Length: 540
Image (cartoon, rainbow, N blue to C red; front, side, top):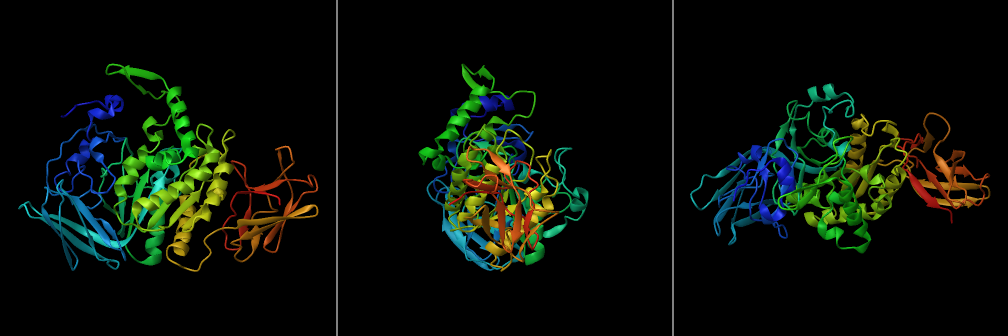
């Protein structure tokens, strides 16, 4: 059944009316790699009832896919396959069809199941290429041949607008430092890019509306600046091919990126759905299709696309389809939206580590490195950026995580700091240490312990490589609580690898914190130039 629907009506149409929706622009690639299939190759993913919404301007349409030999779009020309690990190849065909895959010097065979799903694994390969990958069926169809396939390291980049910000920027609110120069110098044959379009889905999808491209000045401008700069740093340092997947959507809460199975698994996560319902109720309602209702965004001021705030819908459309693909690790830049009371700032401390562990579980690759940016500095008086930054710090308790502090590159009146180079390099440092085992300093000073000493507090830190320093003058950013819930800035000095805080004004203070303000000028660093993280601690 085919429906010709406007984008507005697609938003309002009940999920039961659609099987799958894809962009017409991507549909023309169906013959070679297949945009969507009604058959899931990944256990637990059942796309036959999906409603998939994209923000591309090309109208979407419903497409019925016949039984044909095809691959998911993530297995395309210019793909980068993860080195050193078993290589997962999967797709769809006629039921019970015999499938042969040839890659480099390997040939493997499998047989599709009764619904046409098939998969196989190739032995690990070292970094190299370009190679050709060929998939042949037994039904006399033309084989599928993928060219310019590299073997290297694949990283999955996700989050909201500071990850989404493209290398070219957008307008006066999305400026990237040295953008024109970066684009001109972005010809990197050993870096390949996969840009996933903004896609919201009511259930986990099994495909994406994009394919791999090479990295050059024609493809880099609209790609995530942080992701591209991270990949460039890695390629220059490691001298191997790098595949980087850009799967980000601006202005989105963490709950949109979490699977429904996770969000419904714990009663403490119920406020996510309460907040979502409150947001829905705050929007004007319109009636169509015999009483079906949906929220319509306001026309004035910035308003999120309601689909992008729906719990789990971005996980369904932009993460789940990638989970069968072998990767090296994740980079993440998100949290600004969750700092608002429209969501759950204090719940982030539970949601974020839970999401990391859930993503790792879905990829079935063990404890994949998860590297993230601690949100920056921004003058948002009604929000709680310190709460989010502190929650991101405590998430480092999870093994295999790394954090790039970015508070010192923030701008008081720009939520999208232009300096993405510093952020990307700090992410790369965490990758070199955590994922590649290099013995380098990858973090700024991290709070370890505080003890009272008379009218002072002594604070101990880890990651104090080459000592603690204050940049640009005396230490700033330390506060103590007065016992009634109010906080006060106090003097602090560096002594060796510790900081001593003066508590004369409130000798019975119960707590101390650092760099808590939404926009902070806190200036504690270690000797290799990495800034200290926001923290809050109770006094023993």
